[in-house]
Image 1 (cartoon, one colour):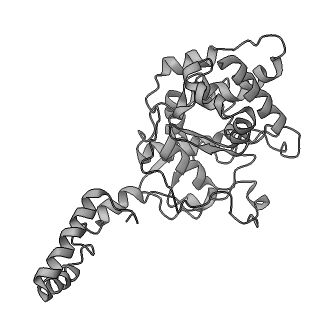
Image 2 (cartoon, one colour):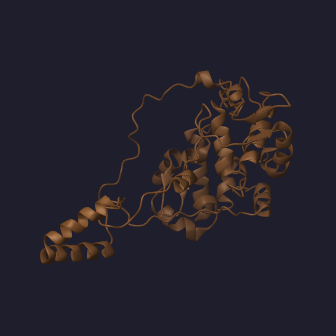
Image 3 (tube, helix red, strand yellow):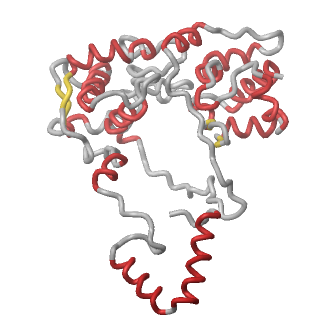
Length: 317
């Protein structure tokens, strides 16, 4: 429960104080009765039911704990993948346009530009299942059934040569694929988590979250085909933008300001170039959306990101 009370709550507390003065021990008895019933300290609220908790408790642990009942085969996953995934990720997981590559990339992690795929980089299959379940397919997240999620997960494993074409993924077969090939190379991060600090004063009273979960397939396809050309002197930034930033900034995904939208960029530009570059490098949560560090493309150098930001500022003034 929040530590901060609104005006209605304050009025309730004021009334409670008056009743305490006028009724004495009678209020104390009523308070004890409220506590006996198991509701909140001030007599309102209720404990979450098992069904309500289950609606949020959908995380999958690496060992498979939390997996739903059901199963899905590579064979069924192939048809589902072609229908719901291939337009962005390619029929063989090779990636289309700016969308992530899902398969291949083995033995590239020591190269200057490694290919980080499910088979070459990821540590646990639980991450794959959980991400598909929560966020895919891109225009309609959380629209897949548990069986469909099992099947698509199994097919992505097959694309990475991790299972045979007759494999069926389920709770019973999970241990066979729970750990992915690069798992041994992951180690605990010893650095203290001090980047984000809890707000304890002058906190925002309201946070507005903006997202666009219903972007049509036609809009996505149009954005894929849009290659922004730069004026002389901005070619490097334009290249990084087209390769890494356009997927969000052409469409305005998750509150990202569209390239060239002067109204959306005006307040941002007023913060100064140095601040915007810092936000792009480290990530930033604003009132109208969020920017993941380097747009989620951690393979980009700081110089790449800086060039892209400078390009967007010039094109959006």
